[in-house]
Image (tube, rainbow, N blue to C red; front, side, top):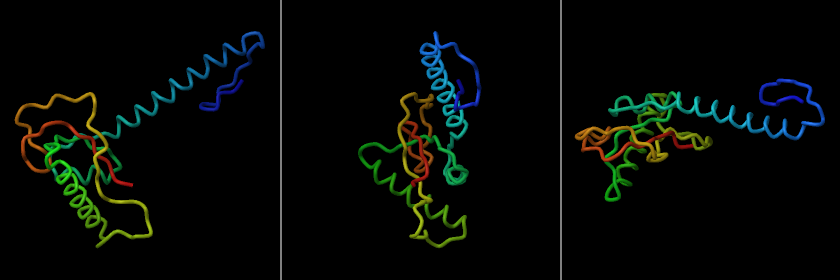
Length: 143
């Protein structure tokens, strides 16, 4: 029997092959999830100020920020973040506008409001507007 994820080979008696396959598949799933989670977690950067936001995105990171957006105006502010991040990313790349032939956007977009929220001290300012933040939001590049 050979594991396709790591190339490990071993001989397994036919008598216990079924149980060994079940166990090995569960182990592969566990190992792959742990690896993917570690990679994801290593690519999350916490940003408190706008000046650090676009550079973190351009490194391929997801960015966790304090955010003031809510249902009244949050979508407008999100569009403003998208527009400003796109302009700054293009400027940093020395481009005036995006090439329409590519599907890669330099703009930021919200990915989610994480279920497990880090502590948000009272009075923490939103990274974009400076208003009091209501929650943490995870951002990524729009593709």
